[in-house]
Length: 107
Image (cartoon, rainbow, N blue to C red):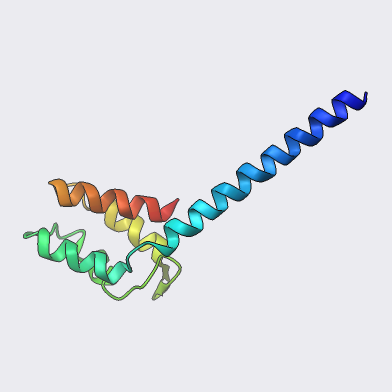
């Protein structure tokens, strides 16, 4: 039985270490992210004819710092989700990069 307990202790410690590493990585990602208003500014510069369904969400993004902020009764994360749902017609390298950045904020 002592061997089993030692294996369990090692397994628990490995799990704790991996969890801590993941939390630190997520914290670093969050610290290195641009504010949503800055991302919205880039979108407006790149996307010449914004799809009408994305306009209100893009406008809302312009007034937000992060996904934890609120815009009226909507959370910043829901604004990002609604924007992404309406941004399928936005194409190109900038669009791909920015959409990935926004999706990563939601993780």
